[in-house]
Length: 309
Image (tube, rainbow, N blue to C red; front, side, top):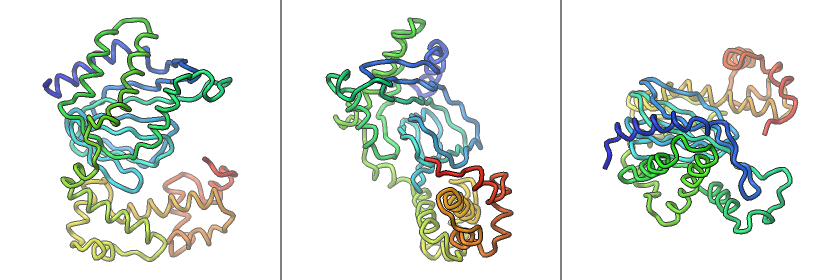
């Protein structure tokens, strides 16, 4: 088995030689596959990205070190030789306390403008692949012996400096092989195998679940500790280590995100939204909202006159 450092070096070298793929599009069987980015990741300790979402698929593979991804109100620690594929629209955040190396691929797959379902894709291969992507739950997938990463290396070595269309087809065929990996159980897809070793992330997940259920109430940090059946001092240290923020900061962020949605989706008054989202005073809510988003709640509502999908 190749050393992860050697795999990382090879990935970095091959990505440089196939950089023309980034931003390119491939039309195949009535669909347009757009490669938004194929990147080597050398993240330094302390790297983090706050909660966000996007309209593309994001594939993230960890070669060395580890990172934490919060998604769907759960926290996952991504270890070496693990990866995930995240679909569009999922709120998520990343953090890498000690730094990590890996690679990522961002892409979209959409029907061509004049495409009629089933007409061009005679074998329904791309349609089937898209259905497969939509059905995949989000959690880390283990890749024994870095097989999936080494497979990408071997394929790119065949086409480095080749015409763009060859590079695109090779990368796309590697992407679709994830489907057969899943179906043949070549990868360990059981969530329990990951979660059992992640005591700290399970503690954080329980805290987050409690916050999501009770954010509208007057919540104290001691209440969260009691609900998790652990001491406040212990869970506060664990929570900050894994998420990069205190539980109180996470509670405030959750309330503000709920308020964001209410401002876009409802006609409730600012005071009603403030109370519904757990803030004791309207002015306090407005000050926090403006500090985080740069606009007052009223100005934010005016700039988002219809619900953003």
